[in-house]
Length: 372
Image 1: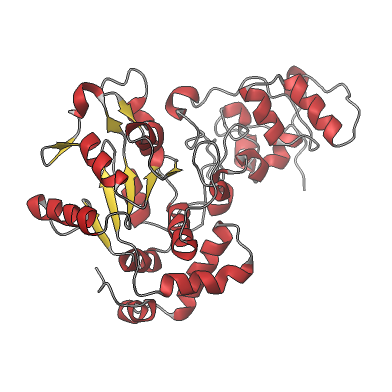
Image 2 (image 1 turned 30 degrees about the vertical axis):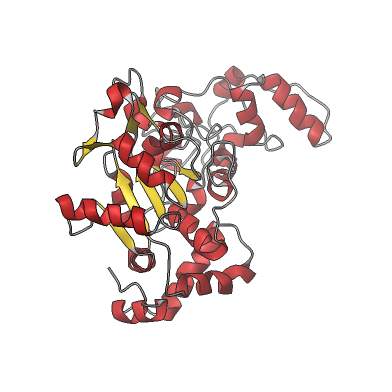
């Protein structure tokens, strides 16, 4: 860890990172948070302050995928510096201490930094039989989370498991696994679902807190709007193929090789909200749909149960044209009828309802001729 009073300039010099690179990182955070460019100076100044909140990272019923995702973030050198300046004092995977020394480090933070530190939680929390299915140092995960999260300034739940129980909670859920919000109600919480979470978004939440002293605006699931406020289908690079009725019908077929829409292969993009198409993964190089795999809606509520089988197509989303947004399609899938949503969309854009081809008719259309 870096000395607690070292400012950003000193940290950059120690790590051999240029000022230009940190400005690039801050610019990326401003873009991710959907802030106007004028906030760049304010964000840079915020992460340059010598004294930052202490950060602790708790792991419970998990696969460590979210920790691995964070440690392999798209800008690991800069992100590590920022997190180090945050005084990242407890994380079982990366800290040198273990056993009683590790426990003492966590106890010190809770006692001396009460109401000031931030906590990131990874993994679900078992509640069955008093929470005995996950214990650390003789204490249950439920006990640790209750103490640490209730005394924190804010809690960030990363990954599907910490949000709503994830895979561990999927039927039949013998351990009684739940997310942080259910296990420890009443805390200041922001959820960062995904399997795993996207480290770009988590870093952006931390930068937002450093800049404004508070968490960003959230939706009804306590997910930040900047990351979960738009339907994936409306951002998808294959959306034009959906509108034109060009679908992959078999893995490896001609349409798959040409990058056509994966809806008929089970893609849940019309139901899912996330910024995967813009934030992407692996140094901003790709994301599942670009790689040729449909979206499984891993940031959606209880997606292991509600979105599987992952390769079964969504119910009846027939040949919508470009005048109907995926948001309207999503509304129809979660409550209203497709007909009602279609009529609403047509009214909104000032068009009169007209007869649309059935899904069977769309499927029966021959594939377009190969373009030059």
